[in-house]
Length: 210
Image (cartoon, rainbow, N blue to C red):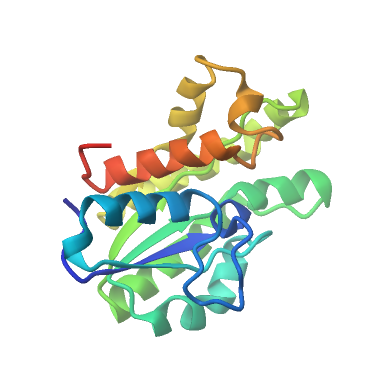
């Protein structure tokens, strides 16, 4: 299993990770997959004494993580860092005409990984972004998002990070129930969608009985 006794696990990302967490409470995990994964893990392994933090912020892109990486990652001294970023780097192209090139996305994410390995030597998990075709115009996002998904996969291999293959997880789930039941706007998960992420995260971390 990836997580050992007394580890400090940090969830980082955008609104999907944030999930309405209380910023005034540094221990609040929000209402989404981070809360579910942490609660599930600690219910299965209470004796391990693992601490979980959530520092996701709604609307963030890779450059935003870079700007706050010292305070919201390095200063917390996590031993395992889970990064889930990318969908806003695509979304801003379509709603604000503010694109992020694949090259800039890769450079920014690589910088986060280099800092984390060199300054903390922490273990890494990368969660690939996903989008579902709800509404239909989300299909056009694929040409921008798919290269970023492949970048996440490539960097996971390069940095020996554990990959959570979320785009495929949601694509498979959408064959079992309507896509909107997993993410009503194609991006932000429903409670069932958050549970899907939490399970995929735990399974990627080597937790087998979930």
